[in-house]
Amino acid sequence: MNQELLEILRKEVKPALGCTGPIGVCFGAAQAYDAIGGEIKRIVAKIDWGMASKIDDVAFPGTEMLGVEMAIALGAVCGDPKAGLEVLHNVTPEGEQKARKVAELVEVHPMWERKDMNIYIDITIETDRGTGRSVTAERSDGLILKERNGEVIEQYEKDKGAQDAASPMLKYKVKDFYEFATTTPIEEFDLLLKAAELNTELANETITAIWGPASEPRFTTARTGI
Image (cartoon, rainbow, N blue to C red; front, side, top):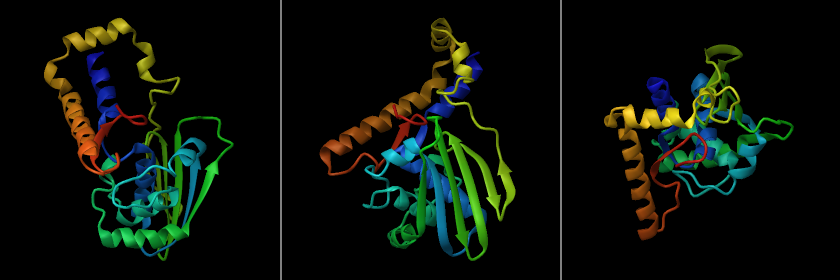
């Protein structure tokens, strides 16, 4: 039991460079571009309605621009697909300027018909080399499909998140969590201390400087933060 709960905890609490809404879109774009490379000609993004409706007014690292289109463009141009939710750690002023132009090539199609409230991001990037595609589901960094010119190059099982009816969390009761908390070696919870330190540091920075909450690394859960 303890080991499974530790694995769940490590999945749910991880560093994110910015708000996980737009960062999830950046991550998907970085994965799609990584699949093909080349000069971007067009980007088509199909995004769940919940994601599409709430990130136009949220900032993200590396630019003063807002909006889904810029998040996708910045992820495609500057994103590190291997960095997870810290995908934008390599943004440069030059890359940001290029992303502004690429943002004009982005088409966003909110999936209003979806009844599932969980994350779903399907991004296709057309370049002079062909087409790259990525599909992210359940989590902001939950890559389930990566294609190059229609050929699958990576594919994974959809992760069962906390909101999923099949989540392994649902089989546990309060007494199980109490036992987990009181019998697990304390050093296994160091990630929570680090999360508290980073969130406190971020909060203090927003008080003492004119910075938005997406300007510094922070620890968050997959969707809502700590």
